[in-house]
Amino acid sequence: MSEISTVLGYLPIQIRKIIEEREKEFSIEEIRLRSNKQLCLKIGQETNLLDYYVTQQDVLQAFEKVCENSVYSYRRQICEGYITIRGGHRVGIVGSAVIDNGQTININYISSLNFRIARQKIGCSNKIIEDIINAKENSIYNTLIISPPGCGKTTLLRDIVRNISNGINILGFTGKTVGVVDERGEIAAMYKGIPQNDIGVRTDVIDNMPKPAAMRMLVRSMCPDIIACDEIGSLEDVNAIDYAMCSGVKGIFTAHGKDLEEVEQNPELCKLLNKHVFERLVLLNPKKRGDAECIYLNACY
Image (tube, rainbow, N blue to C red; front, side):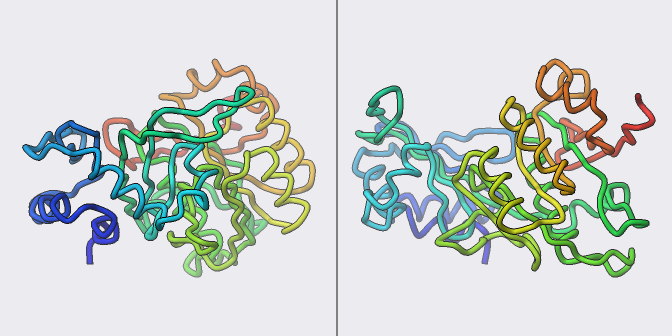
């Protein structure tokens, strides 16, 4: 069964039939439903507009299925702009926002849905895992993964978590307790309390909580050996990382940037770099998704 099978169950029958025919030929990454617009499929780096015009009823029917016919139960996620469904797939949602005191309290008149197909890449971190592991101490080096959006840093982070949580017998590495901060639900892809992605047997997850609060809660409540967190960059993130490091917790994080120089332009991340918090830097090749190179930061400063 392909990864897209679960997603098809949320779509109107006519759209489902069209996509089933395309899936036989291509690996679809996104399915976009826009009211009164052509059905759009993202295949690789290209978008394909099909002859079928999506109706408002199509969008609402799919939205009701995504919310399991209980929109109120998913109100918080709707206000965040996405819902995680079975299989770890994410559905982006846009429409007319309802604002109260500067906060989004609802989205009415849903106009577009974006079904993003989740595909794990088990073993994608094997190339660099030896560089991240501190074999002498049976721990890891504090690591920052850097890449532009869409180059696979979350996919790589997830597989690193799986490896260090399960342990790696061939390297003599014993599995560690990992706390995952999954603010946007992209690492573990929790669905009703169950991770939809393989994140290892010794991993605890907090999702749908702001990263700084979640990091502190994990340290206090779950005593992790390692914390993993996606897309850091704010002052609050940096303060929470400092708190975790001072508590003896190691960390693996990701950040947006094409290279180290671009990351240094973020004044908050630059503080961590200047303090030599990160011992390893992993750069992803934007021209070849998932291709990673590990740099020993201590040798650079």
